[in-house]
Length: 389
Ligand code: ATP
Ligand code: MG
Picture 1 (cartoon, protein in one colour):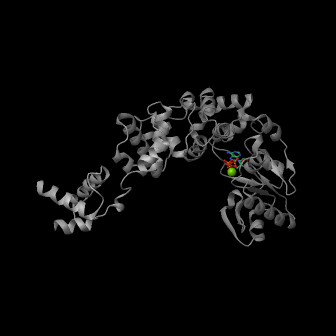
Picture 2 (cartoon, protein in one colour):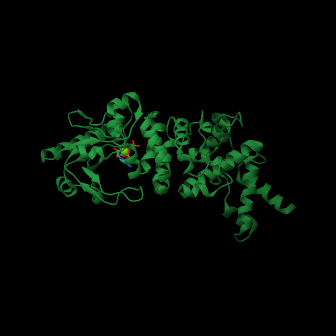
Picture 3 (spheres, protein in one colour):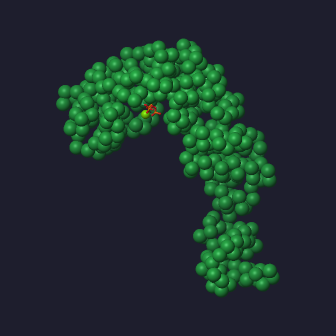
């Protein structure tokens, strides 16, 4: 448990209460604390309006006043404080554009997605649970608050959130909730892809990815999401990073490179995925060479190995890979005993394309231990080579 965030949240609650408002810890923090899991952020819900919250604390950040959220910058941790609210009308199965502030905790909890996410915790550690969240936690069930079909047609992302909680918590989805997902599945197409990506990122970090994707298969969500979604392919595979998760998913979609853009991967993520794929190809086609160990980052090599091992395309272990990489005579161009300036001096030439090529040749010779990484050896090897050319 992140004690600082809890202490900060309890102090924020105390301040709000002293001013005559109600305030509780709500949502994921209550759920995860009851599950004995690490809590990363502690959210507070309050009857105070955003302007009232602002006036009670010295430092606040306005992150979404229209939606009722103010960050209170407590010295121990920043705390998101959100005014009790209900949501306005939903258009196109997306999040509503308007919200209405209310003064009742119950109404606020009722607009939340699942029973396990709709509990509140008071300052004296009493749990407020109007919708059977504790029973569902004990039975490991994801169940919509209220009428599931209605809730999913309000905001279709909730269906993918159910899948995400299956992956994250290893829960099963209540029958009616599952049937409702099936009947509303097509509506997921209306949801912003950035929101979809956030949930998929969390699926890749989950413990029960196979079960989550099986749920997507059974409820037809896979029909709305491009790419190959096959639960079976995930059995026994747990990515170490989000990027490795995407790399593995996209491995089955190599002929459709636009899929990474469809899911709004960042440029950095796309680069990592590409590197993992290239390293994977190198490994399964011919095994890693010294140049591969040199060229690819340790994380990329390990992701490629984990994927290849899962697909039974290599016997190499991650330890082997890291050891082989560590044994290289140099780890980067900066470690070479010479640089571009030296070469220009030796050859008396202006910089140009030849310089990159020369440095690459030298790197290669040093990596394969044809020469030692010393000025002298590199110079005589390179200058003799140039004479011969
Ligand atoms: P995590 O541990 O991944 O942060 P979380 O449950 O805190 O999980 P958030 O996305 O941070 O998830 O949302 C905080 C809370 O807001 C949820 O627990 C839930 O009560 C509510 N919530 C979030 N998204 C929705 C939604 N689309 N519809 C209804 N309620 C939602
Ligand atoms: Mg959260």
